[in-house]
Length: 231
Image (tube, rainbow, N blue to C red; front, side, top):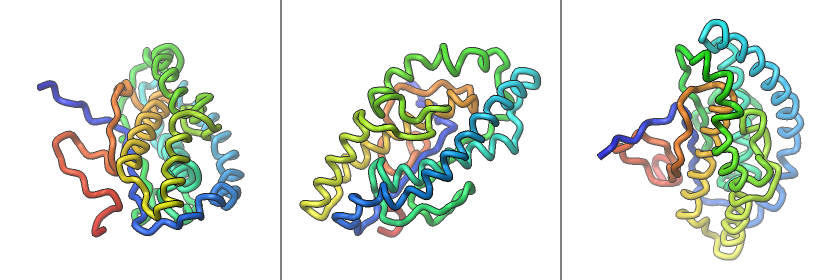
């Protein structure tokens, strides 16, 4: 049996056990202050990525402070996306912060690479990633997590359709379909890995696979039930 490589990108989320049947109708509106902040954060993300490109090209290293900032932007974006329009699996308002918030139900991280290929930095974000862009385009519509794959979800695509189906079921039954939640997390995880690769934050080519479920555990390790510890 061929071992499955562990991705350096970790994206996780836990489904709230008692979701409101109708709050999903206004979450996009409540998240407007986040959208405004993220607009400027993604501009900074783009400039930081350009600086990192040249740093990698000449030193084979991604400056740690710049790396941590860009991970923070992607983490912030994931919390808002999970709350407002991707899965909509929590009613808890996202915090306005770049660092990890341990008790928030959505988590994002990327393992820091000590060295990166100088040659790959020239081609991975456009040429090598083209097959992944095609797949992700079907997931999120018009290449929604752009600027490294994660700046905003524009609409359309499989993720939005399935998220809408999930909240319609929630509205009429009071229960979020767990299997659909697992599938949505798998799609989001795929998109996040492509985003990290395109943003020059890893040399690990994104796998063409769905790693479904709330947690992205190493292969062979059991995951906790959807809903988080202690549900």
